[in-house]
Amino acid sequence: MSRLMHVASGPYAPPVPARELTVDSADGSQIHVEVHGPEGAPAVVLAHGWTCSTAFWAAQIRDLATDHRVIAYDQRGHGRSPASRICSTDALADDLEAVLKATLAPEERVVIAGHSMGGMTVMAAAGRAVFREHTAAVLLCSTGSSRLVAESTVVPMRAGRLRTWLTKHILGARAPLGPVTPVARRILKYGTMGPGSAPHMVEACARIVHACPTKVRHAWSQVLDLLDLDHGVRELRVPTAVVVGTADRLTPPVQARALVAALPNCVDSTELPGLGHMTPVEAPELVTGRIRELVVTYATIKEGA
Image (cartoon, rainbow, N blue to C red; front, side):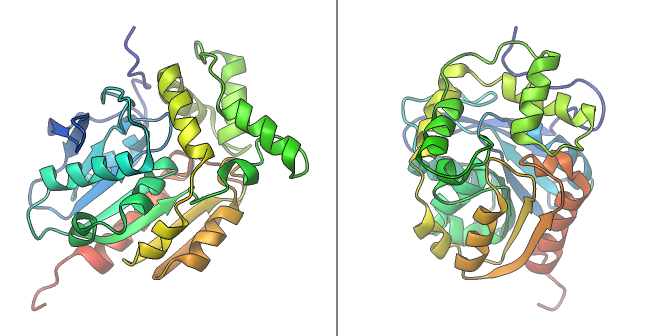
């Protein structure tokens, strides 16, 4: 069975791309890229998070592709991008740079939306010339820059060394997730989604997360455990909006508030009551709306400009 799994119908079934390409990153890693929507339309780049794939953005792609050129790619080791021996935030930045170079015209500027590790990718790339040349604005969804394990509330106990130790070993577990069963859905919903998440949302996320290879999931958990991108936040000078769910256990609101305080040009901050870590799936219209607002405000060339 293919490890690229997702739901086959409904709002979270991935739409068929207008075209697909493979991009070579700086170390030779191959990155799978999908392009949706009309050529010549304002462009949006979507970077998914840990254990996910382009399928995670299905709702955003379906809506935005009616009048935007939507570029979505699989992080290395995820989806249809092969695993690499190199797992680091610098590698994530290399991959994003390679995607921007391969899909954008020399002076084209886009809105980049990053969820979780995708947001960390943006922070890692923030100081690079290619990123600055092509980025008009950024949306950071459910993400953080440091202290991820210490501030996670996946383990329901008081913050401290024991909670941090337990969280590290749970998130970094080497055991395969196995098939998507009712128990697996309940566990995934508890850890990553709000208590009011609809069953079809949970199913969509479970299919995507369970498709991530165990070795890939473990390797990137080690990177996230040691994450320190506070310097990258300070380099992220383009207009940036932040979205987080108040019930996010992986990157709780304290993470988003730290980003808002440190960002040089934070233009909007939204905390969504009762939502968990999977905000693009749990609040698809809101996340898509934020992306559209950023495009209209910062990336659309107005006549006479």
